[in-house]
Image 1: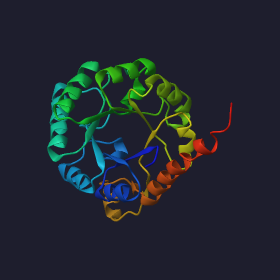
Image 2: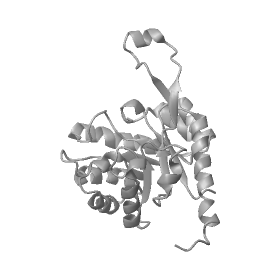
Image 3: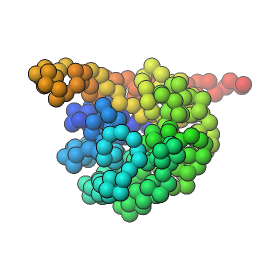
Image 4: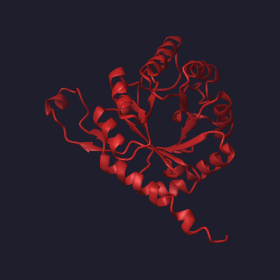
Length: 254
């Protein structure tokens, strides 16, 4: 078994199959990754369940910010219940105040719902909006999250490596630090040098348009992307290759 976990975020049936067959350890299941990921359909949840792969669903009722109304919070609570009823492993969500601080009250209510069903929980990259990531990490741990997805507060994980290293040291094994945003096989090794043990990536590539007329009418965007099994396999191989390096260099004294 690898020392490093690979989570692939997917939003299609083909993506579910590609992740499961090409080396992912865990799926983050979404709809509409083009807008950052929304709650997936029950049908897609059931397909992911069939793969036997550990699957967490995105609980996000709309695109945009992470400041939710009472009605939206109710929708999210019901979506958590739906994930549990289907038998999935966990849920991914986030909530913030207008100034970026984590909304502890909303997060606690969603955590209560997830715990009620014994689900794994992950805080998504709304974490990176927090003005003080060190304080936000302690809040996330205190709330009981299993995982926090972060780029270290930067636009991409490669750009946030130094902060990721600080977060890993601060966490000290109390929570899984999942590095995401801009993760590829080419930069995985550099990101892992921060000490993170888990990477998150879409591993997507552009796919051919099947209906140009739908583009003309504005139904779909001109560029369509989907999970690329070759990119998943390449990232898996990069993680597995990296895990051998510490043993090879273990005799070096710095």
